[in-house]
Length: 99
Image (cartoon, rainbow, N blue to C red; front, side, top):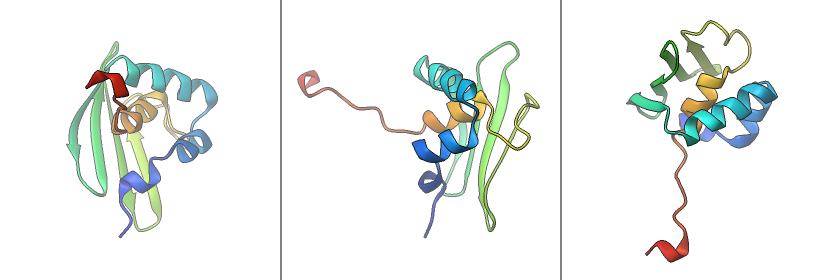
């Protein structure tokens, strides 16, 4: 069974987001600006800190990946809030010497 996580790959994000949106979204995720509100196999909703706070949503439907964001910039492409939301779900690597 395909899950939303299967779609949230680096390649998909780079294909669906303008370069600046990807870079800005990566910075937002790295700085801890994302708060996951809901997450399951087919749906992800989060708040992304900013002025004002934005709510982003990624959903896996019968016809593929769908998204929305309260910023209004996500028509046809992923905005940086959606990129940040997706990247916030990726596991963080722990350095070997951190044990």
